[in-house]
Image (cartoon, rainbow, N blue to C red; front, side, top):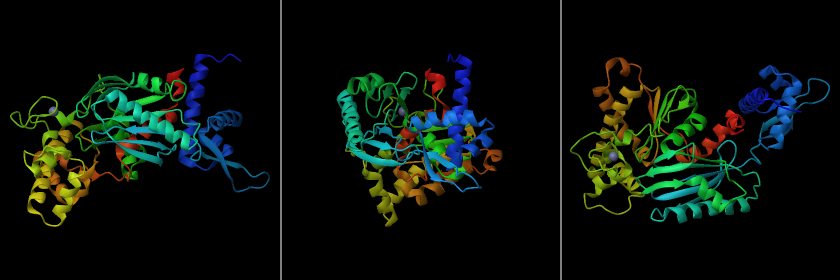
Length: 396
Ligand SMILES: [Zn+2]
């Protein structure tokens, strides 16, 4: 049978509709799917058999009989469908395999070797392939990656990742070199704050999932912006660089080469540096946790440091509110452990700086509710979003 381009699009749209209905109503019968989608039973059956073949869904328990034959119910295939994720971070990189609902099945933390990008990325991919073999998941065909920097999402390139000192890396080419016949082609990369925003939109608490306009602030500092339910990427994939907005033109030097960027005052590294003094030069990994613990025990310098970070966070968030007018702002990373200290400072700055009419809307500013790293869940979410959107439209 020859299928025209239009028929392909219609089928792809119907397929995405059925898959989303299964996700929202699982476990659900084919008959019920037909009622919900208003598609005829044979169309539903044909789409369902494709989804079963792709291992995206599975036939689960037998449903309630209403007389006659008992219907078979359909659910997402948590047991078999697998997705790979790599979450690059200047300190440690996380390699993981998860299911279709972004639940982590296995995860490995690897010390980041940012000085040798090619070899390190290949090392992470080999770890993932090893994990794939150990877990015996033949169905792992897609990988999502979170990168702390500017990426060309369409072509799978890292344009620049200042904290890693990485530039111009063709991720898809590297994946092809490591695994020419496996995960090739389905590699999705995204800035870590953007992927974290997606993680909140797909897998965060209900009050976040229902919102259309979401801002996520990562500890680096990066910002991921979702407006009208869509991630904002900008004309050159570089939207949301609030971490580098100037707070003080004569301030401290930032890694980007400018002075007084917001992240110079608010990132986990800068908080650790302020606490340890200007001489502090080592790795700041875990340092924020120590400062928070000290603050909880009443250490005056630790409290002062966190109060300052909270104040600067509040100044920047006030600017974001004025620019974006979001419905909710979510903070991720280790700083959320010090919420009791930083939140009152953030609230104070917003109270003082944001226009009265916006303030009245009472924009919730909350710590992430995700137990796992938002950027790791976000790497899964990149792939999951494609699947539920119906990637066949764009991938031919
Ligand atoms: Zn900067």
